[in-house]
Each structure stands twice: as C-alpha cells, then as structure tokens.
Amino acid sequence: MKYFRFSTRRLLFEKLSNILVRNENFCTFVPRHEPVCEADVRDLQSFVDNSKRMLVLTGAGVSTESGLPDYRSAEVGLYAKSNHKPMEIKAFLESEAMRKKYWSRNYIAFPRLTRIEPNYTHLTLTKWERSNRLVSTVTQNVDRLHQKSGSKNVIELHGNGYVVKCTDSNKVGCGYKISRSVFQQHLNELNNDLFEKFDSIAGTLRPDMDVDINSNYVQNFKIPQCPQCCGILKPDIIFFGDNVPKCTVEKVYKLVEASDSFLVLGSSLSVFSAYRFVLFANELKKPIAIVNIGSTRADALKLLHINKRCGEILPLLKVEAVS
Image 1: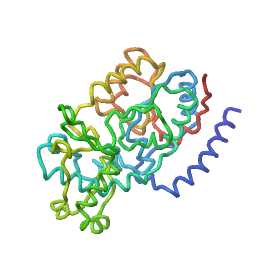
Image 2: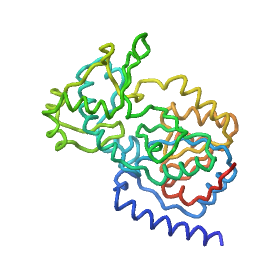
Image 3: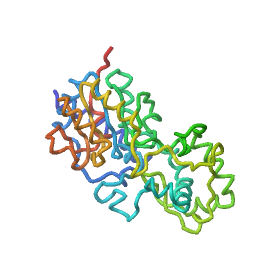
C-alpha cells in the first residue's frame, strides 16, 4: 500500500515535471543526480511528520530548477564552467570601472531575472507556510522567487536584487533606497543609445545577477549617484567580502531557537553565513535534514542528507495543516 501511494505520487509528479521541462530548461543548471527512491520519501516524510514548527534554509540549488545557475555545482556551476569571479564589495566601492562593469551587466540581466518563475520547491514551501508548518524560510538567494510564489515569512540572508540603496545609508541625512525597476528606468534614460546593442550581445544569466557583455560597452555605460548625498548606489545584495547585517543574524538565531526542526534545501553550506545556523541548531539538538545534490559542509555532523533534487522530492510529501 505504501509503495502504491508513492508510485501514484511519483506518476503525478512526473506528469507535472514534464510540463516544467518544456517551459524551462532547468536541466542545464541542475547537477547530475539519481532519481528519488521510496526510502528517500519515507525518511523525509518522517522528518516532516515530526515537525510542527519547521525552519527552512534554502540555497542556490533551489533556484537552479528555475533556470538560475549556482556557483559551486560540479560540471554545471559557474566556477566549473568559467573563470568568472563574483563582484567583491571592496572592488565595487573603490573602483568606478568595477561599478560600471557590475551595473552594465546587471542592467541587461535584470529584465531576465524578472521573467524567471518559481518552481515546485518554492510552491511547496508556500503551501507549507499556509499550513502553519513553517516558522520561516531563510534564503541565501537574492532572486525573490519565494515571495513570487506567495511566501510571506521570508528572511533574505544575502539581500535581494530588487532594491538599490545608497552605501552611505548609515550616515545621518541619507538612507536613500529605490526599487530596482525604477532604477532600471533611470539607467535606460542615461544609456538609451546603448540599449539596443546591449540586448543582442548579452550572455548567460549568472547567480550574481549579471551577464557577459563586451568591455567596449562597459566603458561607456553611465551610472547615477545617490540623488540625496551623491554617494555610491549598489544593489541591496551582500557582495563577497561583505557581512550579513547583525540584526538579520540575530533574528535567524532566534528563529532557530523557536523552531522544532531545521530543514536545509539546495545548499552545500559552503559559506559560513549559512552554515553557522546549522551548527547552532545542532548544538540545541534540533532535528536537522538536508536535501541537496552533492556533499555539504555539514556532512561530518552525520545528519539526514538526501542527495536528490529538491523539486522532485518535496511535492511527493504529504503535509497536514496545523492550527
């Protein structure tokens, strides 16, 4: 009977998955993996059944199924396919050339980002949230696909690509912020003569929200200053070398304490900004499960690790609502 229920769910998922594959070529960015087996579903179902106030942490492996590449996946990740290095905060703040490089690429990437849709993992977590099974979703991703799928209780550990702010916002008299969509209009006005050329030469969208374009166009790209203090404008994203705001870190620690379990989805936990919360949950003896293709930094903790694709296994789980 159990196998029959699993097989029925599996057939339903495969039918839905075929539709997804036709619409979005997510396989381009998803690492090689084995299909989900009955034991995987049984183990994760047991974990979920025993969780009434679950905290979820999501990484780039969740968004790969929507068509966004990650950094570290074998063969298909950004580091495996190119020599590209993400923007570092020090370089962005100190070099106008680096800011032109970032914003010219992001200018082309942003319209593509807005067209990307949530996948089954995002939609499943939204369903769980509405069933009162989640304390919150903490995400390392900056794409806002959780919110796009309908989730409300989302903490963006590394910020998001939909807000632009002044880097002098901690100084008295500033604090300027603008939506990325409005900022795009300003960039259009300043670079109207380049717009047509840019779109025809753009390459693959990257996880740090930029694309490859010709350096000649980068040099001529114009970027505005903060209209309030003439400061440097940057996306509300935690660049490499930057720190997650202390208030955000403290909030997540409190959520770990308030939860009764911790589920990690699509993250290798390579960066300490996310891994520290797993360590904290483990210290508190919270049940922890990880669904991720490939090894993770937390494997030495001997946790439940299901080495499969998130979007394949999550829709197979049955989650009852709690009052």
